[in-house]
Length: 107
Image (cartoon, rainbow, N blue to C red):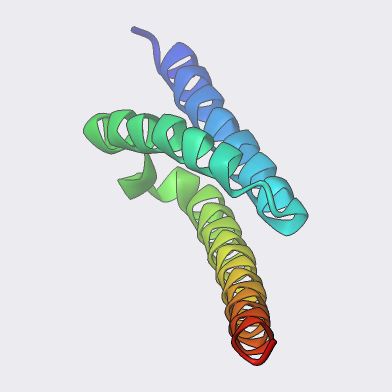
């Protein structure tokens, strides 16, 4: 395979990964955790493919590697924020449940 075709193929794989990460970030910010999980499986297999090809070890893809790292960091923050939100809502539900149980027992 010629170098230009190989670089194009590598770049395409990185573009696909970037798109998946951006979509995951968007979904996580919207609270659509189940869809984030589905896309993470796709991203995982793509990362495996990229790793096997050794794309990100190449010096010419250093900027892309840094860009992808920033996206992963943003995704981590979005998922962490979503997890904190879910934990807070769960706490409210538990508190409400205790209130209802107390009310029911006092009737």
